[in-house]
Length: 230
Image 1 (cartoon, rainbow, N blue to C red):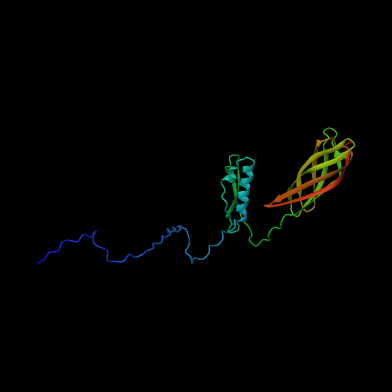
Image 2: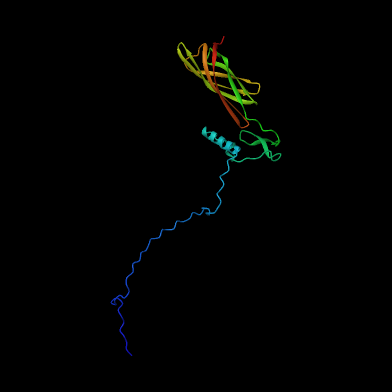
């Protein structure tokens, strides 16, 4: 028996022809977010608009925060709505003391078939006469406020007059109420520049009224005749 010596692989001649191989780099896989819906999933519906009462509560909280006053009652409310007409006693009217502890309550009931309250409306007209207070130099004038239902009214504006001494100006304000018959709102114009005198002056004002969540504002201007008080 003939035994052949082992063949040195390193020294052995190559018998196969070399081949060219191109290796393309692979792109890393992008992970899919966990909350990504499937491709064939139906589109999500847009979020529902906040109910009107929730918007009002949020606006009230922001208004109190703007003036730097903490309101314990509003702070405990969440933007949600309760249908007070769903059943008798679903809503309760409560009165509290200075610590906001309830001292009296009464259940509320509503007629679901009652007609809706019309939007609040306001008309506002200055009177054409005014009087100067001799002691303070302030001007007292009036206006007539008419609403389609009773509501409180506030008035703010300016009174300007050209006098022989220059220009007199002042800020005017007044508070009152309005109803269908028209109510008189008394307004005081405090001088901030110069001194008012007898004669004509230009009044410009804005009146606002609010009731049951409705808010309306009207602006007007007029020429008034100023006289000195006797």
